[in-house]
Amino acid sequence: MKKIVVLAMLIAVTAACSNHQRDEIKGEQKIKVRTALVQSVKNDYSLGYSGTVEASQVIPLSFRTIGTVEQIYVEVGDVVRKGQVLATLDETELQNIYDAALAKYKQAEDAYNRLKQVHDQGSLPEIKWVEMQTDLEQARSSMELSKNNLDKCKLTSPVDGIVGRRNIEPGQSSVSLTSAPIELVKIESVFVKISVPENEINKLSNGQKAVIIVSALDGKTYEGTVTHISPVAELMSRTYTVKISVNNTGHELKPGMVCDVSLGFETSTSILVVPNKAVSKDDAGNTYVFVVSSDNKTVKKQLITVGRYYDSGIEVIQGLTEGQTIVSEGSGKLSDNSSISL
Image (cartoon, rainbow, N blue to C red; front, top):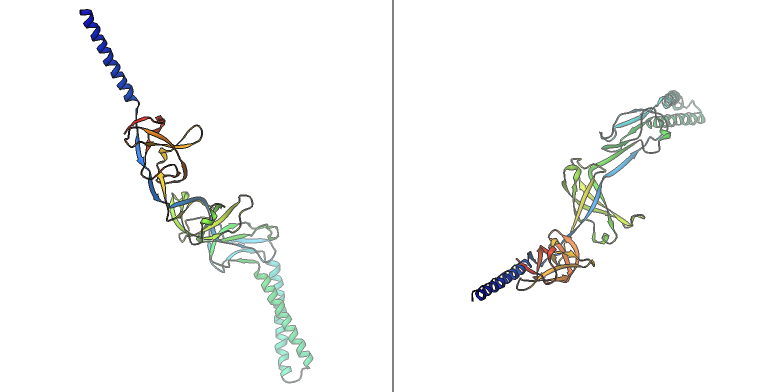
C-alpha cells in the first residue's frame, strides 16, 4: 500500500515539474521588445552637398609692358586700395626716352612761342607757321606716348581688394610670366560652389535659401542664397555647378575652404515614417519590419518598400498603413509569429 502511495506522489511531482518546465519554456519564447506607431509626417526634406568657398571676384593684374621686375610692395593677404602701386618694373630705359621726348617738346614749344609773335605781325609765311604747329604737335604726341610707356612700369590696383596670389619676385622678367603677376580677390561676399547630380538639379532654383556649415571655423553656420545654376553639365562628372552667395563682411570665409551645404524643400504632401531601428533586411535582400498583432502578443513579418532617410526615421513607400504598431527595438531575435512581451 505504501508503495502505491509513493508511486502516486512521484507521478504527481513529475507531472507538476513537467507543467512547470512547459511554463518556463513558454515564458522563454516571449521576447521582450519595444514598439512604435507608423506615423504620417509632412514631406519636408533637405538635400546635402559638399561645397567649396570661392571669391566673388578674381582680378588678374599684369604689366602693360615688358621689363624686369624691380620692386614689389605687397604680400599675399594685403588689403589694397584703388590706384595703389603694387609693383614696378625697371624704368631706366623708358625714363631716358621720356626725358629726351620732354626736352624735344620744350624745344618745339619755345620755337613755337617765339615765331608766334612774328606770325601775328604778318612777317612769317603761312607755310612756315603750319610747319611749326606740326612740329609742336608731333613733339607733344611723342612726349605723351613716352610718358604713357613710363607709367606702364607701375602695376596699380584698379579696385579695392585683397592680394590673393603673388607670382613674381624682384629681378624676374615680365616676359617669362605664364600667369598674372598679381591676383586680387573680392571676398566681402563669397560664393560656395556645389556639384548637383542631374536627377536633383531641377529641384533647385535661384533665390533658394541654403545653410552652410564650415568645419574649419568650428562648425560655424552661415546662410546663403542660390544665385547661379549652370545650364550645362560638366563633361566628366555629369553634374551641374551651382553657386550660393554668402555675406562675408568679416572676411572669415576664405577661398578654398570646404563646407557642408543643406538645401531645404517644403511640400504639401505627407509620408509614412518608421524608426530606423525597426527596419531590417533578410538573407534575400528584402526589407521588412515586424507588425505587432492587435492583442500585442505576437508579431508578423511584413515586407516593405522604403524611401529617403529623415531625422525622424525612414520613409515607407509601400507595405504599411498609418497607425499600425511595429517593433522598434528587439527585432533581432524575432521570427514570423514570435511571441512577445512589451
